Length: 170
Image 1 (cartoon, rainbow, N blue to C red):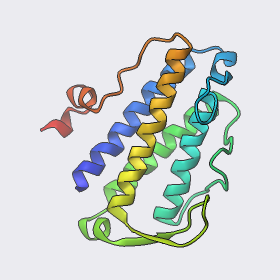
Image 2 (image 1 turned 120 degrees about the vertical axis):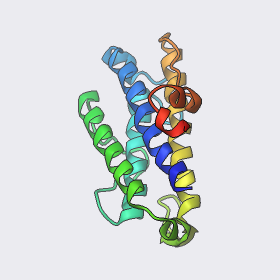
Image 3 (image 1 turned 180 degrees about the vertical axis):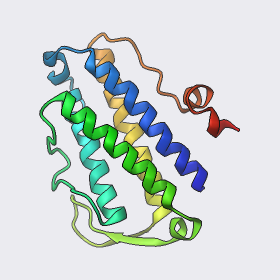
């Protein structure tokens, strides 16, 4: 399972780079246009993804800053958000690399923002949610981009494994 999560951390970085490259081709008005996604615009959705990742990473590691709301706008401009996303992706990769099988099988306790009661979960299961959540909202980002008449992005894991992620396909 460790290699599985390490692959997902690498895939996450790759997919985010593709979404952010597509976002950089938009006008500011398009980037901020509410297209009916859960967080409205691409700007809102990408900020949510970073906010949620920081919340989870704070829970997982006990380190770093984490917003107090899921819809916090952490960066008002795409350039700042892009740099922060790249740094967070590297942080995620480094942390996942540091895990071992015992830690992955172990439990940890946290309090959700939406229902602040203590929850104890296996780290591995929660890590699966963490990566699935990213994929879910990248899908919304893709829908926003196509609604803005941008070319469809290939974000499939299997495409990653055939291209930049070949080291994971062995």
